[in-house]
Length: 414
Ligand code: SF4
Image (cartoon, rainbow, N blue to C red):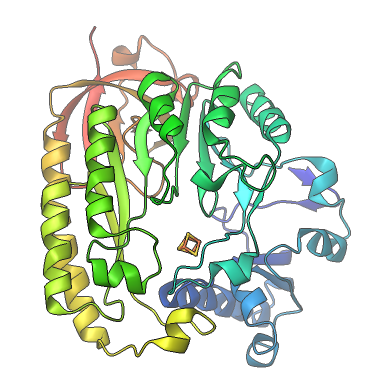
């Protein structure tokens, strides 16, 4: 596809040589930084081998370490910060994205809609506020317009993202306006699912609960990073909630939105997390039975309150042990949730077709972070339709088998 004077080559399309290789980086915790450095180093190898003309790096990692990285990886021609899209476009000699609208590099029936940027909170462990800056909401009319354009291109599911989606509107409209935004987005023709990610638990807006309960376009799925349950650890994290408040929020979500699928993340090995705090976390995860849970090991990030004020005394081995123990508890919960769906009929969106199998998701799964529902293609089961006719559409399927991540299904005969 032509963009300015360039042809954009998808990452998975192996191309022996390119004029410009752009690497987007992440830099908020240790593992993400390592992964980003590896990506830049392998791009540098490609440049040394003559496969790459110019190598450019942008994103959070390059913004954070702009003064050190150029000396460490001299093969990189230009470094840009996280919000330097216009300078990147200028360096490429193409029209800046603000003037051309959004360019999609895939043809999925889902799209991420970034409703705000930056964060005004100050979690003790987190470097994002000083990488991404203060919270700024995108005006509703721009988001609705973007949703209309996406819907016109075949998008059926909008995934709302931000550093904290529940904060939406406080800067622009002086009120929390996520529920109002959702109502406007759900009026867009063609949009059938709206999914909420990254919702901060403190002051969770009641009207968003109502919208999730009553609006048929809002997936009964919520990504709500809770990070811990121990009062001591939550307080040291500066999370503005305690354990009792967190338990009550989970109870309320389950009561007000029957069947809601909750995704959360936890941090293990945060300063102050003693053995008893960790046991409390395990007990909470057993009792709350989050359908989806991801966990990170605490990583001390320079410039954060935690790095300046706490001693990171828990060894990496112990953090890893806690992470594994927590994920073992979660694996059993995820398996039991997935198995409880066997023999049920679910509406799924078909994301992809690989090796004779459709890769689908129900409203209970978000792309990339959750499992998939796999449906084998046999023309006679799909009324003779081709895979191209089925991709990007909704299907009714019956779940036939499940493991802790993925599910197997066949087209429903109803
Ligand atoms: S709310 Fe999220 S992005 Fe903001 S400081 Fe806390 S962890 Fe970081």
